[in-house]
Image (cartoon, rainbow, N blue to C red; front, side, top):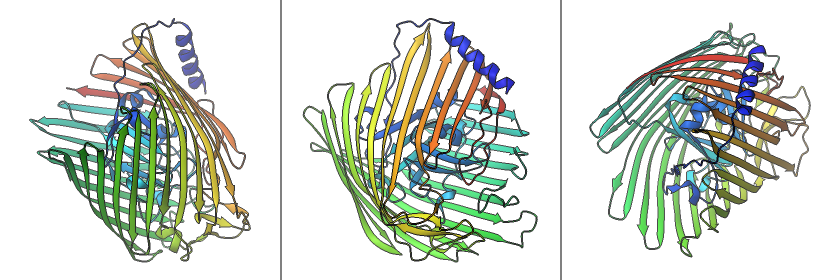
Length: 601
């Protein structure tokens, strides 16, 4: 607590002691990638948030999960520290309705969306993160029900070696090494990370091991990741009274892609294989009492084509995948999915008006074929001001856990119908050299929404479809870049309001999707007043539909000693807020991490 107060006092004192000047900051616009049509940030007619490598360096986050937690509209429900187990939600959707991608490769898991974040990368390996809020099924297919997050790995620009060592509260020890090598026009990045901790309360100890290999040779690109997590899961699942739960996960990805440039077309084929193995014990020291073992393999091939003509850009894609699940609880299941994509972007009225209609058609071997049409429209009143709107259908087939799981406190429902929704959004962007303002109102009408429910406290949780749920909300974000002396400062605010209206709410308890964030306020202030020190402080307020609310403050100080050395001190929850994010699992109180990084170029 004393350390947190000292950090806060230092930041506030520095802020008050320097006078602002009228210098401006020239920012380079980011190209937002897509598996097909790639556009500059200002031209996209959707709500997009981009977290840059500079944002990552300056943040108080020690892991990618905590970094995303401070973006308005995103609700990451964590269990424990350093994102050991966490679920990803966007705009009131649940963890099965949000898609995570690594370099454009879909990381969804047909067993359960609880595994979406298993292979999340170390912050040191990330170039930027692109967040699409709203319907993205037309772009990526099912699972992008309420949005998608694409993590772009580091580019190799120079030969380098980077070592990092970290030590923090709860005997939290973390270390990693990254090697990059340029070979004429080719390059390779190799990274290894290890972390372990005693945990912040009984049976929350953990260890993680991860690797990343990224190689570019001639016209081929390889991305390969492996992550292993072992952790005590005190109250993480089932009832909070189950204190002795334990879990181990191994998640891997291998993807090979290429790009062929023709006179008026770009062809991008890709092959990928994602594997996940999950071992769960209800009683850690008695494996035979209750044990689940699930192994899922997803093998896929996709080809995306962009055609350039006088009529604009046309994107065409085909994604074919096959999922194999072997499970002692769920049984053995297979699923084939084939999704075709078609979209076309028109720019009219001297490029002020953009219109992008599109459609995705998905076939599933165990469910019906569905189409997801959508339309994006934007109008630029000037280089700074843009009004946009979009509408689209989304769709999600149930996971195998939704359908077949049987446990001490939960039971699946093999009669479930797929979820579907019609989503609409109206937004406004103002982008200048110093300011960026985004405002969006959204509406989503969901049919057959799936959640775990029960009528009485002692009943088992069981999946069911809700016939109709209306989700409405508004989201706004504000970013201000300015100079104090010769150094850049950055201030940002975000606010999201979400309201769920359940039309057939005849059950007493719902577990996940229908306890969304009602009010969310996020803020961050990044400061730098010398060539050595930079500071960051963030504040977050959350109020959920059930009335629970909490405030969390994080802060960090980073010292760059010459070009090779970096020392950081990061503090989370410095005012010891007491709160939970899911399943009544208490979040850690104030904790710190000291880091040392050494680079050789």
